[in-house]
Image 1 (tube, one colour):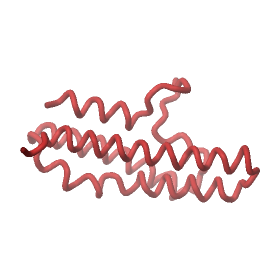
Image 2 (tube, one colour):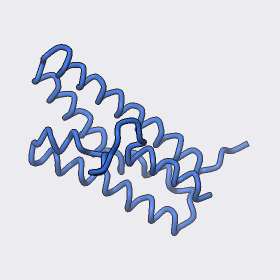
Image 3 (cartoon, helix red, strand yellow):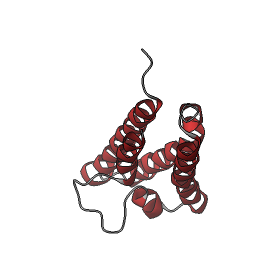
Length: 124
């Protein structure tokens, strides 16, 4: 039995969110536990690069969605990628660290990518 394309996409988004959070945790450890600012910057750069590639990597997963949903998903994922690309262009580690987090983010809440995965699941 084929899995629902919305669930496939949402599962993939969840996996990407977990990977990005893992990279962020490594960066936090590098900065605060190891006092290694250059490792922190590199890990945040790698995290931003992964996020910048999100739209391209997502492309094959949206083909099974309804057209209006596919367009909305492509637009939202494109914004994630665009913001990450912009952070890399200007080289701002602060900007890189803020990717996926709204201004009013509270520790323990879902980040924007995790919230988006939930929204994708509700589209079906």
